[in-house]
Image (cartoon, rainbow, N blue to C red):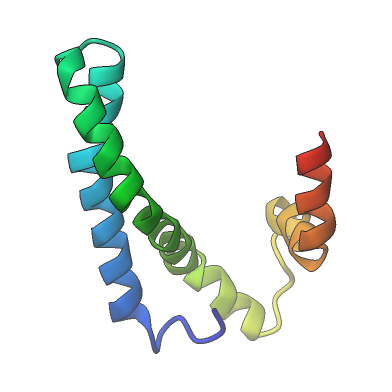
Length: 105
């Protein structure tokens, strides 16, 4: 997460994989669950979601890393963290406490 520029190509690859899983598994799965697509398709998409849905985690993280790249550059040049990110920054410094708190809540 430190050197996003160095790994940008690989990160974009994960973003593409995530978008493909969302488009070809997640959205059809949701649409079959609510009856827009035939209900008979839902079990098949559920299996695909179990098999490929876990690939979206790294892709979502990669997308966030790529989106935050301009802010990281500004911070590296001495600018303060933008106010709207201060809560996320504080939570990141206390991630285990935040995780446990969310679990309990």
